[in-house]
Length: 174
Image (tube, rainbow, N blue to C red; front, side, top):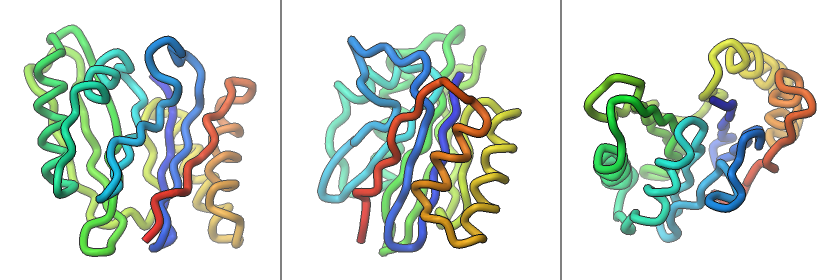
């Protein structure tokens, strides 16, 4: 399991994740540029083989909700009860930065999602011990006026030093 963070300033969605354990032969990043027009990005932490299946089998969808449903279908198609996958699907709904947390825990029969209406606080996904501390670090940095991308990078590096960081993407802008 790994750690990722997402944040929006209202116009741009910023995503960051550590890059340890990334199988470069299949995925070059844990931040998946899922589709353009409308733009959706997926921050994938756990179950990278399954996220590779999603990335290669995904068909473009008209809405973030439809994209979430498609991802759930694809995960359920390729996973067994002994697998797990976690991710955060991000995009804009009626000009509001929105994310869906997608979960497929061990020993379950189907993936589920939960909706976080507006992505206006730092969303953490991955190792819960590190995620709580990294989220707090990022929120404190943002309150002091730091650049959001830099705040997310520092938050991850403060919790998992030396593991490497996938550079945050900031290209999901209204």
